[in-house]
Length: 433
Image 1 (cartoon, one colour):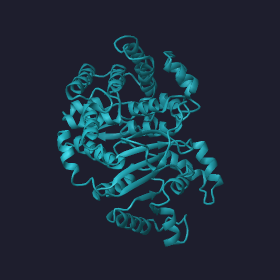
Image 2: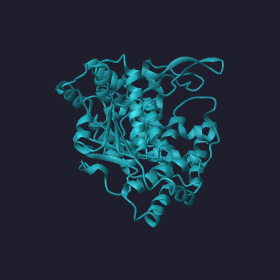
Image 3: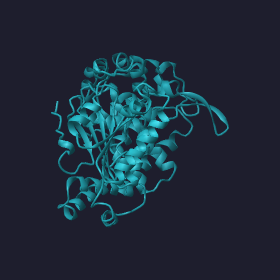
Image 4: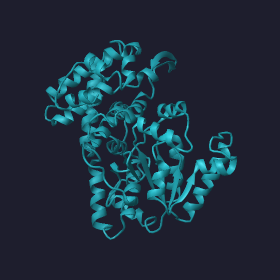
């Protein structure tokens, strides 16, 4: 895989058959493309293998032509995005009723593809910022068309450009639309071009958009004397308000910050597979934080970590202890695997409700490393359970907290978003490869 990625990122253009063969060991779902049907109304060209072959050809046509102004590595990301955009269709495709008609559908394959790839591409050879960009291209590749079809206002475009690189997303989705046969082909191309036009109008053609640059300037001019944590909280809260349409301007964001920026709790939500090192990280970096540990509460309430029958009582008690810390404005860490987005979101929302600074710390550990560490743990879990965790892992999105930190297996920061000053908790940047 690493060699193929390096080739593509250097300008190489292998065909889909070669790519699939070289990726089959590391990304097993690609071997199932030929057996994964698509609805003829949307994809009359055939199965996912046929479609991806066509999309890859269109991506090459773009980077050799109208997208040739992109630098070599950004062109490579467009190609990789096209190659992997439908990676999760084999596990998401279902026969279902849609508006009264039975059709093949692959609902949710974008997000599932992003989650499938994240733990499997750690060692793919990309810089981490490039890996994060690629995951975004896979995870949000249908958004350009949806924003136009649903006539979404500016704040939806602001939200999307935080999550993904809009310029590269345009070229990936254009290849996705061109690489198919359908009755509304011309209309689909038009919608993607309208997305590009709206991005220019709204100042969201680049990652983060004009509004993020304006927020950073506001922080420098008006909050330069405040702590890094306060600035991070104001940045994160302001982004959320601009992206949900609650406010329209940076000036409103600054005015609103007077109500919450003086005293607040620091809520850290750990995310990682069993064996990724969450408890070790807490002991090393957050020794003074209140610690709400689901495993410890299972021992306290049920007498053992493996007792799942008392999960309801454990969660209720955990949330109450979290509320106590948040009300008292004390720093607190929520210690659990937190692999599902809906579960993380409920905890983060408590933090938002109490005016806390919400930070997600994501331990991006290779599955093989987590497996070895799990075996060495005092309280290890079965290999089958750990595989289930990997299969169900929903990769965190940048809008789930005020700031988010991705750490490697040695607890060094691979990437971060929402950090305006020094890295928090005494963390250090990972060395560039």
